[in-house]
Amino acid sequence: MPASAADDSGAPPSFQPALSLYGEPALGDDFDHFPHVNPDAPRGGTMVRTAVGGSFDSTNPFIIRGTPASNVNLIYDTLMEANPGEPFSLYGLVAEDVRIAPDRRWIEFDLRPAARFQDGEPLTAEDVVFSLNILREEANPFYRSYYAGVDEAVAMSPHRVRFTLNDPESRELPLIVAQMPILPKHYWDARDFTKPTLAAHPGSGPYRIDEVDPGRRIVYARDPDYWGKDLPVNVGRHNIGRLVFDYYRDRDIAWEAFKAGLTDYRTDARAATWAIGYDFPAYEKGLVKRITVPDVNPSRMQAFVFNLRKDKFDDPRVREALSLTFDFPWLNTNIFYDSYRRTRSFFQNSPMQAEGLPSDDELALLAPFRDELIASHGSDALFTRPLPIDQPEALRPRLKKALELLYDAGYTVKDGTLIDADGAPLRLEVLLYDSGLERVVQPMLRNMARLGVQTSIRIVDISQYLNRLRSFDFDMVISQFPQSNNPGNEQRDFWTSDVANRPQSRNVMGLENEAVDALVEELISADSREALNTVTHALDRVLRWGFYVIPHYHSGETRIAVWDKFGYPEPFPAYGMDLDAWWVDPERAEQLEERR
Image 1: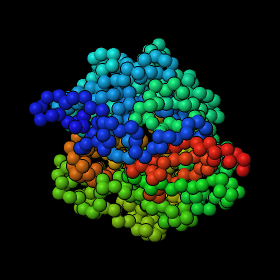
Image 2: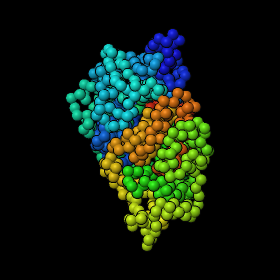
Image 3: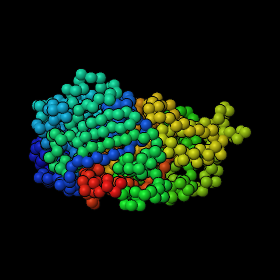
Image 4: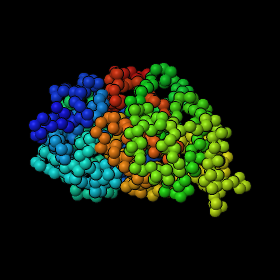
């Protein structure tokens, strides 16, 4: 019986080693390792990866201040661990067992007495309680909303902790609690948690911080004394001895470093490079190979995001007009080698994507907000027109329609400049920290200029970029809205009014909409897959017809290039490539060095 259930008598369930959102966990209580891993994988070696963005100034990834080092989460353990081969199930890591009250008002975890931090101190229930409190009180405000469904955590004994829940309708909340990172109370109690630090502070995970060199690199070393290395969720994983993240200011320099063998692994997000860039000697000699991994989660929404806090973006007709200047067919043909498809939905390539006209169930969810939505969206198209939105494909009719929308919104063109009723020109600046994206931005800005919009690009370093985001000092940025197959509490941080003006929330656009707030709560409390899909359809419609972003594109796969010294399990697990299950093959690594 999964921990999310009670027995027929109504008594509290017994402790169980796994936690499932729907139905039974796929793996039995006696599993030895995840099915996709190689339990005999060799350990050792080094993987050097790229971090693009200039530098970092903090090894604390949880706070709002500073720029965190890449992949610091490697040093932290959580109560339970996901199996990449199945959705919606967790298995014991720090927690040996778990149980949930029949009314879902609390969840308890029994901790493993052997759990230790990297400085040798025991990990106890007090550390779990401390972690929840400090994340909610002193960390990035995201955590306050993410764990809003938890009233408190109480240490019932040194190795048992109970979370009292105030949101029993949220089926995902127990899994969210189980995946909370655990911080050492004995270390952070005496320090200012809100202040950026470059200290190699202790976690309890498989890797420890080994080298901190701001501006150049951060290195994580596999902890030979890791307390959990023989647990079933860890067998065959965390095999590589050193994980190095070298920093480069832009993607072009990082690409040259990879070709020269200075880095071992790269995710290739540039279509032109993937299509024609692999003509260098190491690839032709077979020293480098390429791997494509089909996406199993919804395709990530990447988009230009309007700052709705600025009056010039109040009118949905203005936002729609500006969105029409993005000429995806031209980009795909001339820059992307026809390797992408246009992203249209916030839940693209999943059953959660809205299509056609709204169903009766969707209309029932939207009906209480009909008047407000018609007012905020400027029309009833949300209720009466199908998705995807019918727009011209060719550029000239797109720009013609855009100009008509701008005229309807009260703009006119004078001496080639688009001005409002007060004579003020419409100006728009795109803020970037990666110069490699300039080639995507410039064609759109040229099209805007044809309408009379005054446009510019500002490229700044990552620290200045983050500071401007935190202070909402931008017109438009490029942002991403990744979705899992089971969206939940994190949607509050994407869309809701409570976080719209909270620095460093993921509601980058500053959206404040009563209907969206209500739909997010409906989504979180959905009690079946069918109900969840209905809510996401309704939410998708509201977001798409609001023209709050200009969607980009997706490929439907992840493209990876590696120097051929790694082993990895095949086939890849069903719900994501598990990089933790890779290893360095000593023989191939030696041969590679000789051939280099």
